[in-house]
Structures are given as C-alpha cells and as structure tokens.
Image (cartoon, rainbow, N blue to C red):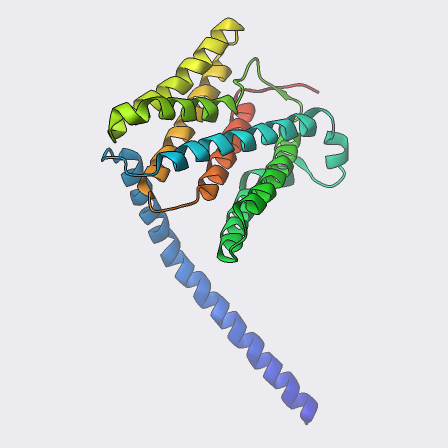
Amino acid sequence: MALTDTFGSYQNEIGRACADGRQSVLRMKDDVPRMINDMKKTYSRVITDMSEVTVSHKLVIEIFAWSSALVLVNSIGSILGAYILHPIIGNFFGKFTASLCAYFFIPVLCHSGIKRRQRNFESENSIRMMMVIVAAVQGLLAGFAINHRYLAAQPIAFLTPVSLSFGYAGIVDQARRNRVKILGASLGAALAMNLILGALFDLLTLSYMFLTLGYIAIGGITMQLVFDRCHDTSGLVYQNVLCSLFVLFKGLTFHLFGTYIE
C-alpha cells in the first residue's frame, strides 16, 4: 500500500509539472511576440533619438576604448581558431555547435555573468578579466566556425571602436551636447580611418566596405544605447554588446561573401 501511495503521489507531481509546463508554453506563445514588439519599439526609439547628450564623456570613451581591446583579443582568437587550433577544436565541436556558442550562448552567458558579478559587488578589473577570457574563447570558436572561408579583404576590426572613441573625444566639447554633431564626428572618424587604410593598402573590395559599414553601424547603435542609458555608471554590458555584434556580423559576412576553400 505504501509503495502504491508513493507511486501515486509521484504520478500526481509529474502530472502537475506537465500541466505547469503546458501553461508556461501557452504563456510564452502570448508573451514572446509582445516582448519582441516592445524590444522593436525600444530600439527604434533609441536609435532615432536625437535629443541632447547628458551621459558622462569619460564613460563613453572608456566603453569604446575597452571594446577595442576585447575586439582585438577576439580577433587574435579567431585567427588561432581558424588557422592553427582548428584540428583540436574540431575534436570537441562541430561547426554548427561552435557557431551557436560563439554567436549566441557565449554573449548571453557573458551578459548574465557581468550582471551577477556586479550584484555581488565584484571589482570592474575582475569582471574585465573574465570578459577578456570570454572574448578569447568566443574568438576561437568563431574562427573555427568560418574555417576554410576566405574574404578578399577585411578591415582591422578593433580600429573601428578606437577611431569612434577618438572622434567622440575630439568633438564632444565643441558639440555642446548636440547628438547629431557627436554621432556625425564619431562615425565619420571611423569611416575615414577605414577608407584611408583601405585605399593605402588597396583593400577597397565589396567585403571590406560591407564589413566597414556594418562595424560602424554597430558602433553607432552601441553609442546610442549608451546615450539613452546615461544613468548607468558602468559600461561593461555595452562592451559585451559591441564585441558580440562584431563577431556575429563578421561571421555572417564570411558566410555571405566568403569563398569556400578546402
């Protein structure tokens, strides 16, 4: 009798769990479209907002300076993953799994890790060290995912956030919080730098220009997000956003324009 009662109680618990799961799925079917719609509205508002800039100048420069360091580490990892360590990585990951990890799971987990460490009042240096390690691992997997694909030319990714920070620093005092002037000077500096380098080294191919414009657009969107959330005192989340979007856009470009070579 005791065994029968125990089995019956487990059966009831499993039944309740299944019912709760079905209810959660039904709620998600209603909630997800609403969440996506809300996100579209939020990002549309942020990207098109041209009000005065009130964010700390130091914060903006710090975000893009540190973002360039993360992108550099990521790029080095990508080269290693594509050309040197790909046989080793291939023993543990398929290309599809590596792509999912590099483009989705790692950015999400890094974002969650940043938030958790901030709640635990860990130092920014400690969090940055974690982000550098994550960027290196992400780069290894992203490089492995695009192994055997070749582009005629591509810009040096980390120089775009560097030039954005220099462009911002050079105009911010004269612009007097005018967002249009600040964005124009910052994005213009990044575009000019990439065009000059491309012209000097004869790299102005379709893939080079596509990546250049994509990187600059990502930098502009990130800058708008920072301007919108001027109450934030830490830019770590935005550094992860910029670096991860760079990785994703580069991967998409390699798959769109890259030539497959065995």
